[in-house]
Image 1: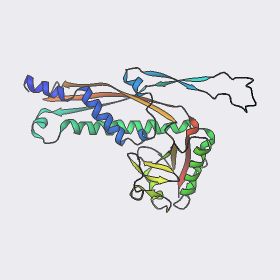
Image 2 (image 1 turned 60 degrees about the vertical axis):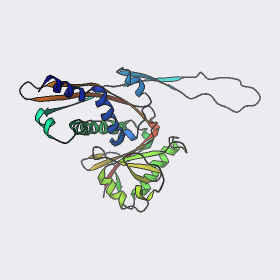
Image 3 (image 1 turned 90 degrees about the vertical axis):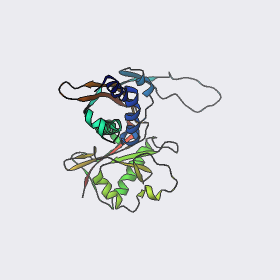
Image 4 (image 1 turned 180 degrees about the vertical axis):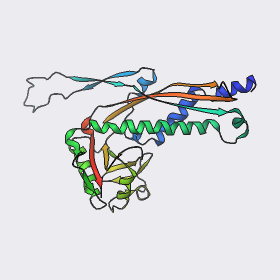
Length: 286
């Protein structure tokens, strides 16, 4: 490889290029990223590894009778969003492949890296179901809620009701639900399910397959299934905040072959700010 070719090879894998391509792909295809907010991403982009979040608490209200006798102190809750999760990716790209293939090597590697990172994010974010308010959990590991194609709609109505009762779903804030493909199979047999093809001009998020009981439905085979049981997670974007960083992207020459090694480190973290904006069904399929 000539010095000029090597330089071009390294230029193709600039961190900025990778960041744009990888993040764009994740935002479009990662299921759980459609269900969280990114309100503090700008702070993460500055390179910080933890972000302090101050959330105002309830303010005093009362009936007005001509005067206000007392004021409650405006309290706040300080929480910390830590970017303490990491996943790396690495690939060896032979020089001869770069010279002879018609496939864009950079795009191909980004797709492979995206799939690996996407799985890690989906699994991590879905585990936030453990932080759902206790009153918003239907069933348990020892008392699973049995689901069939004829009962699934009623259970999704209960999920939506829990989120509405807690104030999470409002006319301005819509709900979502994430299910495993096995649960999707039941849903597709349910007459009340409205799939994307029948939604007309209704706007849906990337990855959504439609709506049921007012909840936008996302499907992921990375999450929601354990041995003999399924976890169905619903909520609104107010529930969980998420931030991420691509810490490092680099290309180095392999020592024992005519290849370039491309490797990267992606860090991320999440924090449940509103447990009442999550709802869960612990279920079995019959």
